[in-house]
Image 1 (cartoon, rainbow, N blue to C red):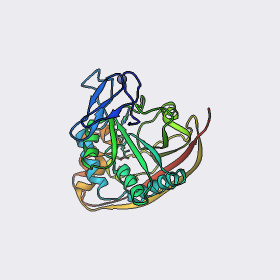
Image 2: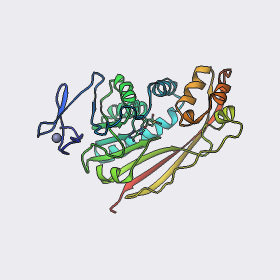
Image 3: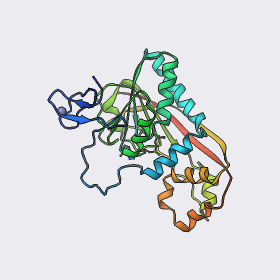
Length: 277
Ligand SMILES: C[S@@+](CC[C@H](N)C(=O)[O-])C[C@H]1O[C@@H](n2cnc3c(N)ncnc32)[C@H](O)[C@@H]1O
Ligand SMILES: [Zn+2]
């Protein structure tokens, strides 16, 4: 049995060769990339459903440079320690994107022989196409972070990296005492990149640490510099940011002749435990 649930009746889904099926008989095809679409609100085909191809490709290329590997390794370490202490368990990655972090976590757990199942959901089919190409041992579903099709009280660890979240939904899918790991950018994340684009760059607004139903255990800030040495790398980094949409073509064009850039990256890892409400 999978921990994914049927978006129609809420029953557990069973994973068969090419479909997921609930006991009532609702069934969902598994795409050739290996994900299932459990998103019910396809009302408008024009509506943006998460990251598009350009953004996903840019992020896949950029992350493959491993400039964010210190963050990846730290998140992986926290997950491994938690699941080791719990004797294995279920991980839910909400807004998993192309699973750069998730794949690494799965491999790290395999190396330490810690039993696990990982579920990744993302609203973008394009992101899950890329995630599926990794052929990692992760069950993937197109779904919204605001209506998560994962069984109640089943997750030992929830990860939510640079992605939307809804505390009530996390509370629902988390076991009592589950660990939640959130990652978000700090005020001066990518500051030099922003200075190269904007005449008057703004600092990032920092996410609030409050998370209903979860107690903050600790935060860890990671701040370091990265060096980019091609225009492609610079454009990819810019294209995977949310500012990309809001930038005029005139400002964006300032990056066209830039062949190297040193910029700081600043992340906050916030680690919580589920508590009774
Ligand atoms: C900045 S990316 C982060 C992806 C991945 N966690 C990482 O760090 O590489 C944000 C992701 O959230 C997804 N997303 C946006 N809105 C969403 C929603 N309502 N539900 C689920 N995922 C969503 C996007 O498609 C995108 O893949
Ligand atoms: Zn059903």
